[in-house]
Image (cartoon, rainbow, N blue to C red; front, side, top):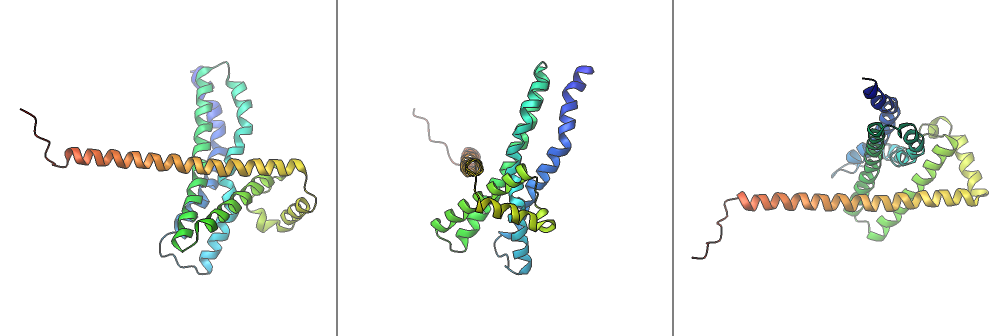
Length: 223
């Protein structure tokens, strides 16, 4: 009983903040499914939804920075293998689901831009800019503790920090934002590639079963 409590106690302790972070991460993906659906009308409500998507999009990628909590959790769990495994699985699920929502949002955005006639170069520019905005947003959240609501509650403070960073850029800040941007860009590309391959394998597998059980005549055996 005591061993079971040691395993579940850290998981339960992490559950609350991880669930909250995943809910925030899901908001842009849900908005993207609504805004970028075929035939969506771009009225005032649509543009308001797009602004909310941009404001909340960094939350999806932000979950990757929660890796800062992992070393302490692993050190505490190291003497107990089952607890160690549980922590690794829990954080792995957090990273996968959170960044998966980010990659899904970016994929839906790219597909929608192509559907309304944007060129491949234009879509690429938007993707690069979106990753950069999210990298800056994550830096502001992790270093300055801003969140999406501060764009409405404390717009002056957010603007002051951003303007100060642009006026007097520090090499360390530029390096951090650049590294985060690269992680987001590469991570999104890898996630989308893995999802595409997985979907293709699933489709091929279903097609294979369909051919096997679809009533097609088998080739006659040689006498």
